[in-house]
Picture 1: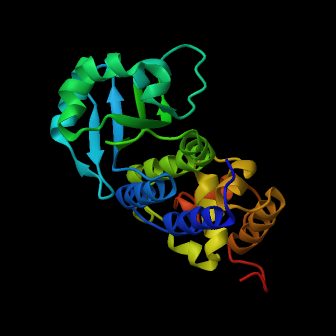
Picture 2: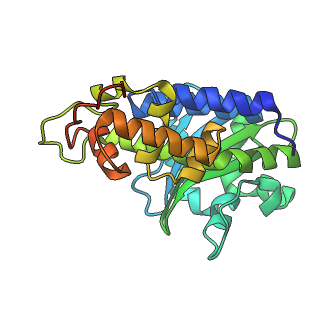
Amino acid sequence: MQTTTGTAAQVTDAVLHITALRSGSEIDRATSRLLADVIGCDDLLHTRVDLTGEGTSVRRGPALVDDGPTSRSLATLGALHPAVASYLVPGDDRSPRRISDVSSTRTWLGGPVYQEVFAARRERYQLSLVTALSPTCGTGWVLTRAARDFTDDDVERAAWLLPTLVALAALSARSTAGPSDPGAPGPPPGRAPVVARLTPRESAVLELVATGASAILVARTLGISERTVRKHLEHLYAKLGVHDRLSAVNVLRGVAPAAAPPPGSA
C-alpha cells in the first residue's frame, strides 16, 4: 500500500482536531469519521465484546448511536464471531482482519452470528480493528459492507492507521475517566486551562504522551519526525515549568500546578 501525502495529511489534521476535544464521546465520533473516510465502508460499529456477558456494547454509524439489539445479541454470541475467536488465539498479533481471512463464506453466512446479528442489515463483509484486548474483553471497530469485500489495500491501510486508533482510544478513555482523584480540586475532565500556553501541535503531543504513547508513536500519529516530537516536548516543558513527561502530564490532568514559565518561553 502506498499512503498518499494527502491521506497522511488528512490523518494528521484529524488527530490535531481530535486531541483538542474534551469528551470521550466527541473523540470517539471524530475517530469514527476519520476511519470511515480513510478506509471507506457502508457502516461502522464501535464494539466492546465482553465474554462474561456483562459489558458488551455496540455503537453504530459516524454518530455512534447506541445499538441495543446488536449489543444484546453479541452479549451471547460474541465469542462465536470468527474475528473475535481469532483474536483470542494465544500469540495472535492483533492485526486488522476481514471475515474472509478467518472464515469461509459458507460457514460465516450460515452461522448464528451472521444470521442473528448482521443478516438483516446485509453486513456480509467486515473488517475488524482491535484497540484493546484482554482474555475476556475486546474493544475496537468493525467496518461493514454489503456488496463487496475489503481489499488487501484496505487491510494494509487499516494496519497503517491502527497505532493512531489505539492512541486515540486511550485518549478517549482518559477523557471519559476524568481526573485520577475525583475528590481532588482541579479542572473537569478534558484539557486543563494551562495548556492555553501551548501551540496546537504542542498540545497534541502532550495529549498523546498522556495516553502512554512513546515518542515514536506520537511521531507516527502526527506525521512528524521523532526528533520534532522531542523538540515539542522541550518547548512545552519550558512553557509549563517542568522537566519531564510525568510532570507535564500531571499538569495536564490538574494533579500538579504549572510553574510560571521562564521569560521568553510563552
